[in-house]
Structures are given as structure tokens and as C-alpha cells.
Image (cartoon, rainbow, N blue to C red):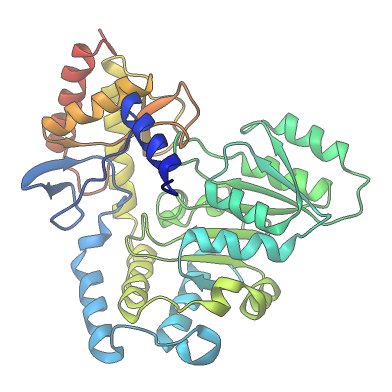
Length: 393
């Protein structure tokens, strides 16, 4: 018997249901328009919020770093892989975030996996929003702590669960996404901090989709709610609005010092390349000096939401540039995405298990570098196909 027959069976079931994901291959730089299979496509599904992937300043900084430092770090940070660039980026990120210190990691996923098992362990308690990102879930599981899930954004439920465990003399952690990636809604961070203080629980936010989007100059959700110094652990990613790769944790100096001694991804994996690190230094400098890109992002996001609403699409309760066009039925969603692709719009369908069953959607992501004409073109294609499939009238 072939050892992976069971996988072939599951793949065939996905194909029959119409939920098998076709991975598209880009033949051009990530931008408002991309080349796929030799065809020019309007790109409405990337996380390149601020268009920084192709920013000339950022590219030039990356090129110069390769010329000076080569293409790789050559070792883990604790042996011989810490470059002056890594420490410069950590200092500038800390200043940008108004935090005591920052540790740089290889991805946002690894930032969560590195952090959670260090602050809680077996016998401890984690209070986690039921819609938290997979990387938070994985970090929680690795910690071996008891995981208590509370209803999405429901602070009464969170308080009730904290109350249930208030007599437990263990370490407690409340962890949440800042911006939820599939719905675009925002965690009520002030209330979470208030409950953390009341029940002596640490607070942690994964701000992957808030960095470069929320707050003054895109400093993120902690700045947005004016909670600097009150959120214990602020995790960020550098691959979305920042346009490069990597993740980081911002917090107290003692937390960051301890992570540099014990965080496994930091200790056992080579850090970001010189090119990536130098590019990110320039990104932080750009955002620190000017908020034009952030303002333009919100202008475009508000415009496309208004257009979708005008035509009767269900965009949920998004409070951010993430705009889910919720269709519900999984096969209809994937058919919608395929028809968009045929009409020159790249917008991927998202189905279970990425989102709950019955909430299949096309997640639309606009950027700073989309023009009004780009957006109008995309919306019209959504309208035409939505009417054909009976999604709108």
C-alpha cells in the first residue's frame, strides 16, 4: 500500500468540493499590478500595504548592504551572526515603538512561537481570543500551558473566564491579535489591559496587520490606543506593511534580554540577511519622518469599502484596510475568485479552515500605490461577477 494514499484521497476531496487552492506564481515585482502566467493582473490580495516592496530608497539601502556585508549573516546571532545592522534595526524599532527594547526574529510566526513558551509553561494559564492567528495558537500549544479560549472580542466573556481562574496562583497571559487578518476588526486593547491589571495577567498583542497601518505614523495598535508601557509584549511582523521579511518583539529590557538568552528561534536559526535588515532600517526611517503613505492607504481603503457597500456586498465589520467580501458558500467563493482571475483581477478565495465554515470570502487588500482608477476597475469586475453568481442583485 502506498504510504500517502490517505493524502491523495483528501486532495481529491478538496478538488471535488472546489476548495483546492491554486497557488499563483508572480512573474513580476509585487505591486498594484502584477504579471501572472504572462497576463497583467490587478493585484488585490497582497499585504504590501504601503507599497514599500518596490520603494527606491528601500531597494538602494538593500543593495548597498549586500555590497558591504554580503548576502548572509553566516551564523546564529549568539555565535557570529550579529551584524551592526541587526543592532541598529533593533534600536530604531524600539525608538519607533516607544519601547524599552526590541528583539529581531526571522518572522512574525517565529516571534509568537519564541515568546509564548518563555513566559508561560505547564500549569500556567493562557486566555486566548478564539479567532487568534495560527501562530499564536501554535505558540500556546508549545508552551504546554492550559489554554482558555474566550469569545471573539467579547470582554465580558474574557472577564468571566479570568474570574473563574482568579484563585489559581500561576502565571497568566492574555493574548490577542491586534487586527484580525480575515475580518479586519480591532481588538479592544484598553479593556484587555484593564483586565490584565485587575487579574494580574500579562498582556500580549500580535500586531501583524496593525504595524504600518494603525497609530501615529503607523506605529501600531499600542500607539493607536495610547497604551505605551502598559502592554507587556508587543509582537510585530516586518513582511506586511514594512514590505520585507522578519518579526520582532518589543517590550521591557528584561524581557528582551531574557529572550536573547533563551528564545529558541533566536538561538538556533540564522538571522535576517544584510539586505533585508538594511531595507528595514530604511523603512523605519521613512515611516518615522513622514506619514503620507499611511494616510494614502486609509484614503484608498475607505474608498473601496464605500464602493463595495454601495453595490450591496457584505464586507463584515472591518475597521481597517482589510476588506473581506463575504460570500459564504465555499464553492461559490472559489468560482468567484477564478472568474475574477479570468477578468484580470487577482483576488484569492479564502475558505475553511482558514476561516470558519459558512464564512468563505475574498479578502481584498488595497495599498497606498493603488490609484482610484485601479480600484474602480476592480470593483466593477466584482460587481459584474457578483451579479452573474447571484451574490448581489
